[in-house]
Length: 150
Image 1 (cartoon, rainbow, N blue to C red):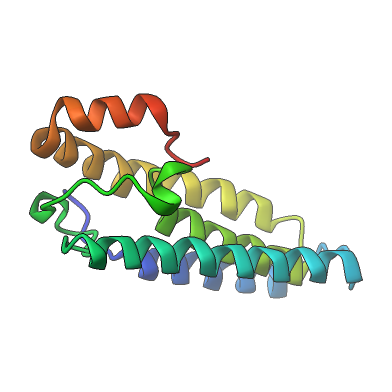
Image 2 (tube, helix red, strand yellow):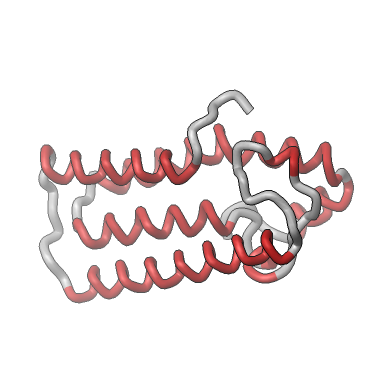
């Protein structure tokens, strides 16, 4: 993998950009109970996805380090991995969505779209290539059954 920025740092950078945009380019929908409710739902879902994903890796005694996917020893396909191939990244995306709902700034939609593109290109695609090398047809079959995001 070429870029060695841990995904949580990438997510923190995106969140920082969202906060900066909110401050410099106010385009707020204003406070809304509905947006706050959506933010809380996103945070709960993020916690579920991320906790279950990490727990699955620990149960299967494989690496959680996203910068070294080639060190994976087991292909985890249970738990949240039945619904998404990338529950940790989905959880991070949900955290950004929660922040976007909380801020209510329409410009942040662009940051979220850019985040999905960047994390897919510099993190997910290289991980998938490493997993194909490690697990071959087993991983390809899993990819045909489970979507990258949802």
